[in-house]
Amino acid sequence: MNVQDGMPLARLTTIGTGGPAAAFAKPTTLAELEQALVWAAERDLPVATVGLGSNLLGADEGVEGLVLRLAGALASVRVDGDVLVAGGGATNAVCLHHARAAGLGGFEFACAIPGTAGGGVRMNAGAYGSDWSEVLVRARVVSAEGDGWLTPAELGLSYRHSELGPGQVVAAVEYRLMPRPPDEIKNAVADLIARRKATQPTNKRTFGSVFKNPDHELGAGRMLEACGLKGHPIGGAMISPMHANFIENAGGATTADALALMAEARRRAREQFGVELEHEVQLLGPIAVT
Ligand SMILES: Cc1cc2nc3c(=O)[nH]c(=O)nc-3n(C[C@H](O)[C@H](O)[C@H](O)COP(=O)(O)OP(=O)(O)OC[C@H]3O[C@@H](n4cnc5c(N)ncnc54)[C@H](O)[C@@H]3O)c2cc1C
Image (cartoon, rainbow, N blue to C red; front, side):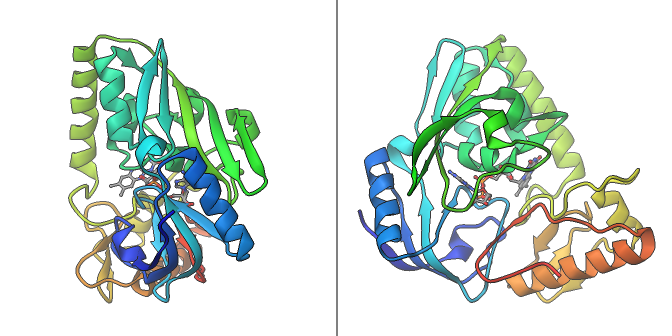
């Protein structure tokens, strides 16, 4: 297994910020993944897996430990009857492509979620009223402690949440889909993507929704818009002028800039609405949301 030093997290995340990962590897088979986990355990290093880094904010000072990105067989996709079997590193776009080619529907909701199967499980990602828990049959979870297939209930999937810890790697998934004509899938996806482009900054560098929607009549975006935060900048980061629950890298942003914007957003939501916003974006390295 080839372990690289100093891979910048900025290259592994869609927002494009973050310092170096002390160690970085791209396992392509289950055996290589297990080897990587043993390598880290022998050195007492923490392990983090990244998918497309589309919901990830990495520390500017970097992260100690081993960062993994699954590739090769661990990112492959095949269809078996009405089950789509994908490696944890398979992108949602590729999964959707295979599902459509096989005439299998049910995964269309993921068309605008720019992540991987593993990231989808970890986040119980979702859109348009559906989420991973509805299509996932089981996920293969590998860690230094062992290897096993877990159901959505065993993974503890709920709104943008799972019980998976940092050292637990989703190596494969099985999605149960249902027959649907490819043309119908294509049209449904085009419709969902058009809706998305009309409301969210899909052509900017972001990490998706910053905060989970609170238990309130206003979603996080509307609440932060009401706080007057649309377009609010700190350093190179800016609350999106299009949707206030997104932070854009407007040029030269750092993770510290994004965290400062998040702190400001939380402060205003607390003062104006008495609501404690909880962040959806995942943090990598020695950073916290205040
Ligand atoms: C433009 C845009 C739109 C988005 N829209 C949506 C949306 O509609 N709905 C939604 O839910 N999200 C959305 N997101 C957020 C993001 O795409 C999802 O959370 C996605 O599922 C993250 O997948 P990822 O592979 O990129 O994970 P990453 O961002 O790389 O990682 C996220 C978390 O998952 C963990 N992880 C990643 N891979 C694995 C693995 N193989 N095993 C174990 N843990 C893993 C990471 O350690 C981290 O904790 C959006 C993001 C962007 C940039």
